[in-house]
Length: 262
Ligand SMILES: [Fe+2]
Ligand SMILES: [Fe+2]
Image (cartoon, rainbow, N blue to C red; front, side, top):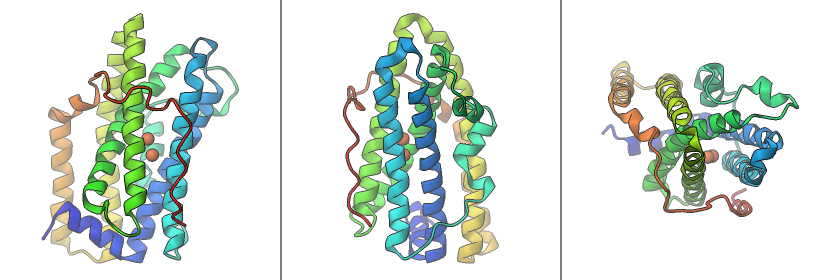
């Protein structure tokens, strides 16, 4: 039967597909970690108070990268090269979503608008991360190897999303509401397109590794396109709303250490 659970199970059971899955995840997390680390270093004076939270955000993403690499090591696998077309974080940057890496590699302080852009970009991508990890948690929270990892990452992604809501609402109260809505909308519409393209590319690679039939691949591709059509019509709206989060000051303390997976 074709279900998301079976699909994940199949990918996890095979060394080569598991290797690709973890490598893609680790690469995206590490890139997120680097971006946040640079943003924390370049925070404008007026937003100094935010720097430790951005640094914590980066530390969490770096930790997630290490967790996925540890899962690989535990199974005696080396990380695989991440195919260009499956690199979600890099493709978003290429389409001008979030802050450009060139800017982040520099030493010039960011502007307040840059910080809003970073938060709006994170608001959208953390929504995706939070939903994806919730899905993995639903299926594999009790898995002997993956359970602790997915539970911890899922909790962190929920924290990141809560933090984005809280900080963007603070900026909205300070009079940046229109700017925020504009950037959020632009980010969300670009993200759903990149997410579709990356999903199709990942499934294409997985299909080849796992020897899926043409019919099966076609059904999966149609499913991914269906999700995109829904998101383009109405689903994107869930990525641009701002509500006071149940978790307050979610990134207020230091990062929790990763579970001893390796
Ligand atoms: Fe993460
Ligand atoms: Fe995150």
